[in-house]
Amino acid sequence: MEDEIQSMAQAETQTETQTEAQTEALIETHIDETQPETQDEAQSEIQPEPQTTHCLNCGTEFEGKFCPECGQSADTGRFTMRFILENLLAAFTSRDGGIWFTLKNLFTRPGAMIVEILKGKRRRYFSPFPLLLSSLTLYVVILSLSGSHHEYREFESKLQKAEESYVIEKEDIGTDKDREIIVTTKKTLSKILGNAVSFYNNHYTLLYMLTLPLFVIAARACYGKANRKRYNRAEYVVAIVYALVIVVLYRCIVSLVYLASPNFSSRMGGWMPLVIATAFTVCFNKMMGFSIAKTAWRSVLTTIFYFSLLGSLLIMVCIAILVYLIIKFF
Image (cartoon, rainbow, N blue to C red):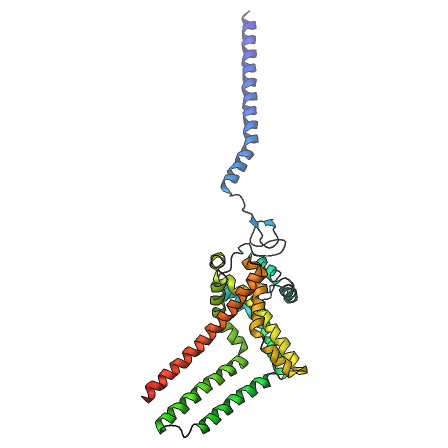
């Protein structure tokens, strides 16, 4: 009897031992299975979720600094004056778009092209300042080869002859001091006018660059207050530069026409204000959101305002010289 009791106790002890072993094995298995999930969750908590960027050029969603489809930078933003200056400095080496494709769009859909560029679709278009400098280089070459610059030289020589004839005719007027003042003033003003014409003819590239602020002032004043708030100055510069490319290419055509008909070439040169207004109309039409008629008359106002500012600067220089002469002689 005692032997049976002992055997039953041993059997119960073995059963309990096996149960505890199975329980420990199940716990260890559960820990091994849940440990990778816990590690994955911990890693997911440590690593932030990747941020995607919407490409402004082609519309692709991507991760990283450059679009895998078109290659445009992920940090493409609005035009700023810093970007304009960097773009100007890189004008001699930058080749970030197709020049012929850009020219084709500039003459077939200029307004839509500029709007696309301002919205960020810039990869396939040639940058504005390299395009302007390339056009100006072409103009200088054509101007030299066609011989149309001789027409400007003749105008300068006529100014010089008029100055000399004036001195001879006015030698007997008034006292010596009065005559000296009149002759000196006339010679000085004629020299200023001659130098201005010579500078315009010989430094066309530099003149466009120097008068860009005047174009910006005129455009922002004439295209309305709402558009001044909508677009910053740098974005106006972009549209103006593309408009000036059209103007420069027109000057190239004028120089080529000089080979066949110098008289007709002179007439075409007199149409420059109208050409500038037309170029501004086609480039600013989509950007401003106006009708063609409204954009056209505002572009005419812009052109008039620009030449008024340019003339005012020349008048201020002449007044300053007159004041200097008056102080010198009196």
